[in-house]
Image (tube, rainbow, N blue to C red; front, side, top):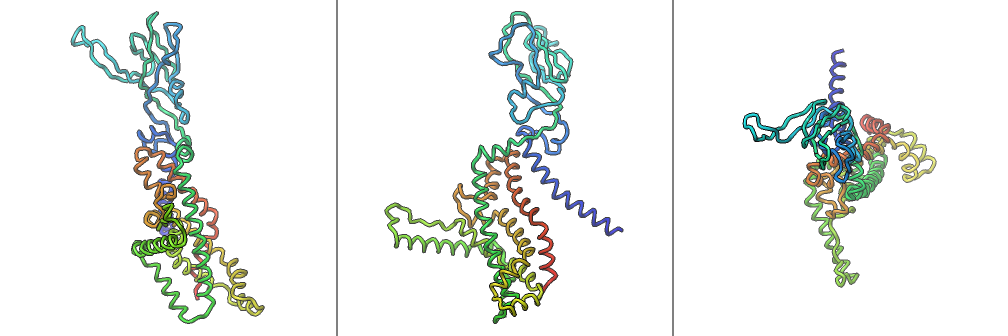
Length: 408
């Protein structure tokens, strides 16, 4: 009983640790810029006192009497397209000069919060307001009254709007371009290693050739090689390939005339090759452990019927290995989609071809004081992996368990 309770507590803590930051990201991305700068995300779900500035009337408005009526919320929301303010008015900040009680004939600057229902002097007139935002400003007859800006504090109701998403997806073309680049990198870099690893796993599981076990051990050992250690030889290799391709282009074409002989060493293709190389050891290990546990009699029956290795692989192994293939696809997709290090050093440096993690890293400087925009971009980057995981989660556990308990 104690162990079960402890397990539930630990599980609950893990859920809280993962869910709370996600709620914070989503809530902040749906708030206004002013709200994100003045209060934490936890205040966005309950009424919060926030300050606003409003003008009593427009400059070109013609006043027909010595009394001006209006509503504070309507004045504020006149310029609020996405986040209409609602709630209850608490107070207004009075700021003006009043007679100095200590120095007759002189004035002193006074600041104070005027509560609801109390009359305040504004430019010689009486200004009074209510909780619902209605106000009446009575001033001397015949006065040419100019608009007055006042600071009001409102116990504001929660309000959410997708303004930040519209700004980063429509008004700013960098985010859509980065999404397209991430798909261009992630999809081939997921399919290519799965395809190669599936063939290799079948060979290690069911085909006999000299040194099979030692080669498998060597492949699995590559999983312990740090990614950072491989950057220098990889970069040198891609630079050498780019130099060779440029020399070949100069030999076969007249690119010197148009000055178009340069071949970039960092491109989408370099990311495909790098991610494929880094993903192969784990992919081969998972798929081999799964395939070797398939019924031996099924493969022997196929061989008796005259099926070749290719026919066995395509018609028997691949359909039965869908859980293992899906589990690795999830791993590979999530890793590549969220990868920053490899994309930063191996990927294209052109701003139009940068992937989403690089864009997010650069937005820390661009949107450093605009958390709603930064968090909207972060939420967008999370949506695709979440959809992929939810769509394939039924295969995820099946593939991992099968690959871990079956061996040969």
